[in-house]
Amino acid sequence: MPLYALGLNHSTAPLKVRERFAFQMDTLGAALRDLLGQPKVKEAAILSTCNRTEIYFNGAETEPVVQWLEAFHRVPKASLSQYVYTLPQEKAVPHAFRVASGLDSMVLGEPQILGQMKQAVKTAAAAGSLGLVLNRLFQRTFAVAKDVRTHTDIGSASISMAAAAIKLAERIFPSIAEQRVLLIGAGEMIDLCATHFAARRPRSITVANRTLERGAALASRMQADAITLHELPERLPQFDIIVTSTASSLPILGKGMLERAIKTRRHAPVFIADLAVPRDVESEVAELDDVFLYGIDDLANIVKDNLQIRVEAVAEAEALIAVQAESFLRWLEGRAVVPTITALHGHHDALRAAELERARRLLASGTPADQVLEQLARGLTHKFLHGPTQALNQAGEAERAELLAVLQRVYHLPEEP
Image (cartoon, rainbow, N blue to C red; front, side):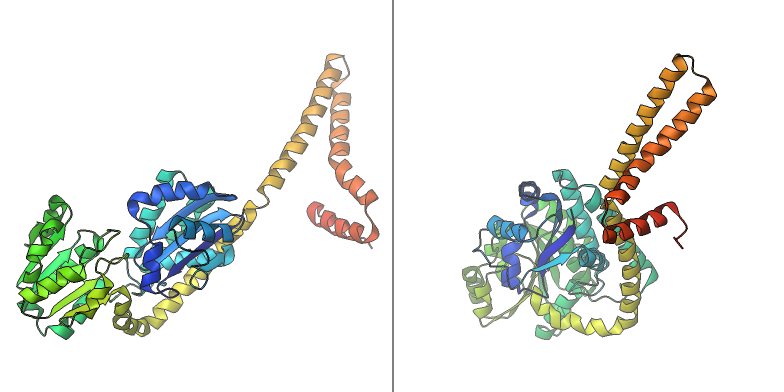
């Protein structure tokens, strides 16, 4: 079965569409097992991040997988038609390499995507949805991504989401040092944001998380405070800058909660960077006069300027990826002939076994060994050549010419005069 990749990302779909097709980590294993239950899907892995949802699978057709994706997320049929891309294996392989290397990211060269892809593979392995082809693809993918980052400058001076959030915040507040920062969540993205904001030495940093223990672990490294999400309604008015990135399937900050916070703050401005998909902040919050709400897609204008500074590094990375993709595709195409090679071995091994048994009987009956060996060799030669000879004799003129050319190549025969 051929290899495919299909999905949607920040280049093909807006945030309001991407968040509808995002997978929650706690349901991803069940989703993979359900996908394997679809006709002609042999292997599968799902990569779901804030910027993309992609399915890599070994199967016969792409349309049933698109329909499964729509059905799993309970959206109307054909909802994906204008946003989804479907890539056959000759494009899917280099695409996987580009994604892992950070070439397909909103933030060029960002390193988080490689870890996210490794987690997706680990989840697929735990769900039993990885087979030989996908496992080989992803192991090669990780090796290529490492080579790209080692041998090119693609990751140097990368403007991360966290750094972009600070740039946006500085448009509202001239000095971060005078502001009180709230970080909602305790995952990798918030960890990165905490590092960037701590470097600006704000007046205070507070981490809010569903479990106090995990939030406190992050806060302790930044000399910050930790609270639970249940405390947000009461504590929200205290903060000038809010950055949120959780795995919640429902918004954490609603319009009503922000309205009450703004009133308490006497309409002092609040900057909010929502880095979650699905979004942690209700979109209606953007209607409030004193709230400056930015989402993932709003960061594009900040990071796109970074694209031009490493054109040479991108070209080097693309060249490396092209070579590695060609190598993997040769292996993949070789997999197509494995059943035929196996059948050939089985066929000739059966002929060998039959002739060997005949030779043993002759030896047991007293036939001289030299005579038995001669008959064994002749018998094997005759049986090995019976198939090609019969095919030549039964072929029409055009087919015979093709067979002759193949046999001359296979057996290194001299061409007919």
